[in-house]
Amino acid sequence: PCLLGHCWPGVPYALHTMPLNYFEGLACATVEAALRDLDPNQKEQLEKLRAIFDAAWSSTEQFPREVKPDIFTLLRCLRADKWKPEAAWKRLRTTLQWRADLNVDKLLEDPPASVEGHDA
Picture 1: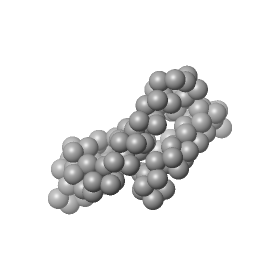
Picture 2 (picture 1 turned 30 degrees about the horizontal axis):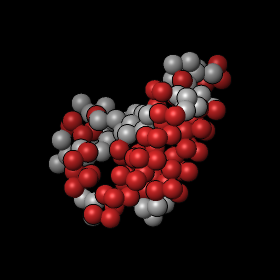
Picture 3 (picture 1 turned 90 degrees about the vertical axis):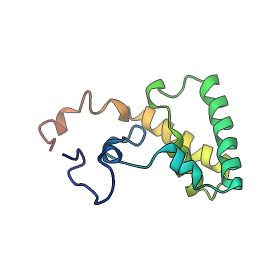
């Protein structure tokens, strides 16, 4: 059975259940497939964003360690910001800070009383 509640014809079951970073339930292709589709400039911009991110991640404790973004998240930010690594880092940093400020990644472990009993 598909964990997403539906299945896509022709897509292997393993891809249905592969979580996209910490957003449970989203599915995607493999890292290799995602990278293979990038042109040389896009690959260069991805490497720049990875360098920016890795430097910031290792030099600060402001972001929760359990939510380190994966390659798909970095690519989403780059695509959203037209392959500009500095803008993509700002987007990602803002998102990580928002998640930390609102304690988003702990909601499933300890849901507020107002939502208890509303799970599907």
